[in-house]
Image 1: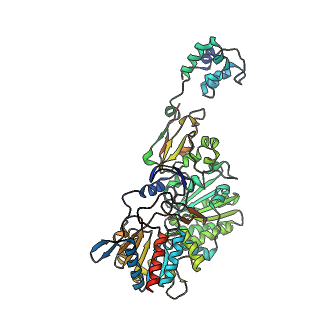
Image 2 (image 1 turned 120 degrees about the vertical axis):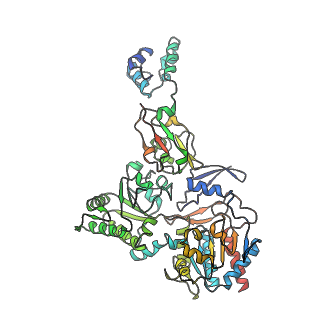
Image 3 (image 1 turned 90 degrees about the horizontal axis):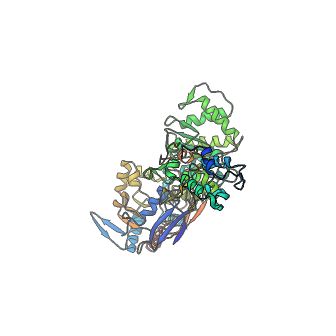
Amino acid sequence: MSKLNAYQVYKMLPGINCQKCGEPNCMVFAVKLLKGEKQPEDCTPLVEDEKYKGKLQQLKEIFSPKDAVAETGLIIHPEKCTGCGNCVVGCPAIAAECPLIGSGKGEVRDNVVFRVENGKIKVVDLTKCRRYGPIKTCRVCEMYCFSGAIELRTVA
Amino acid sequence: MRFKTVCTGCSLLCDDIIVDLEGEKIVSTFNLCGHGEEKFLRARGTERLLKPFVRSRDSVREVSISEAIEKAAEILLNAERPVLWGWGSSSVEAQIAGIELAREIGGVIDSTGSICHGITWLAASESGLYTATLGEVMSRADVVVYWGSDPGHSHPRHLSRYSVLSRGIYTQSGYEQRRVYVFDIRRTRVGKIANVLIEVEPNKDYELITAMRLILRGKKLQFDSVAGVPIKTIEKVIQEWKERDFGVVFYGMGLLASRGKYRNLEALLKLVWEMNEYTSFVALPMAGHFNTIGFNHTATWVTGHPSGIDFSRGAPYANPGETTFVEMLQRGEVDAALIIGSNPMSSFPTELARKLSQIPLIVVDCFRTLTVKHATVAIPTAITGIEAGGIAYRMDSVPIILREFLSPPESILSDADIIRSIIEKVKRKN
């Protein structure tokens, strides 16, 4: 996927600039697709029109859900974790999803990056991590980890 | 069954703990740090003290609870100078009963706070105490200072629950809005995430605080550095604090146990007081046991003194150094002691531990600690906050209601009930 450029992705799109996806044209959509901000299903003609079925299949294969661990570079060492919850409360993605957790109050949710369970940090849904999306520079959880239990490998 | 409860792992008393129970077994816990998790797991662990025993010469005999209570009452009544010590891990109800017991037997009651954060009140009586609740800290504080305390080890959820990372009413950006200052002798865990880490030379906190007070008053110092800290750094820190809206100093044993003891805190509280001319500044203790602060409050509103209260003269009398347990033990004054929810045998210096092992000891505890092994009478108790309810004071002096969610092992009473039973026996014998 990394070898693909925006023009190659553009060639797989309908190219009719219908703007139904909310973007000005198909080229912008192709760029956003590459950045991970859009999914192939966001293109309405691609899904609705039978003649683009092959192209949709091809795009889905290319932009299939990514391996979240490899994508985010997040590695947890549970043996070092003290369960302080700094990563959970500090996480901007969790705070946006659930302001109560962001204010420090613990809550049990399944749609968050991680939570503290049995005195240790546990990954719940890594696809919610900002690093899974476009913000590869986010390192808040690692920065505020007391014990070095969270390690973020640099990803391309 | 899902149960919401309060953790009694430290004096932070986190009230957002969720426990999944299957009958009497804890299946999983949520939001609990390592400390709390350990405490919750030990409730059903193998270290529990389950049977009361009485030691006579070299033999140890298992007895019933009532027999152990009878023996405890006998020891306390026969003693000339009994001391009731511990109370940091007991509910307020048990502490009130303890004070009544001390009054009844004409003994001394003292808490673990007298060698820990209890000296806060000693310093506060000299210089006053500017304080706030942790809720206010969460909502307002934009300067967070840790002086001689490392929540990374002692209170793991301190930063995420109340101080640095949590987002409050006026601190919606959380950590981006706050500056963290750490004053310690080494790079501690919290030092790793501090904006400014100031490494103070050991035992030189008083000098540093005095220099800070002078700089705050606009005086020019004739040195390049104080306590290993360059004057320029101190000036910068003071200037930054003055420009901020709300500052909080969390002081720990690093400050209170180094040279100068409570005088260090007195100077720090005066600095906090002087900072209030420019901005809002408060100081809060990082107490250890979950109800250490509670004993000081309870004792103050029951007897008028925060710790080390002597009832031998009829009326309550307190003089730190004279009626506090450690000093009394050092002088060889104590001839019987009731230790509740504390393990002095492992935490006291060897000389004091030896003296402690030579007097009749009544130990009320839920675990088989080293002190229990030296006990003349050992009485098991239910764990407060897990198997028994009650009230405990958080580190910011806010009372929190504890609820039980497990039933205690068979025939085991809560610490408040045990003390009340001893009072009954003492009253009957008197």
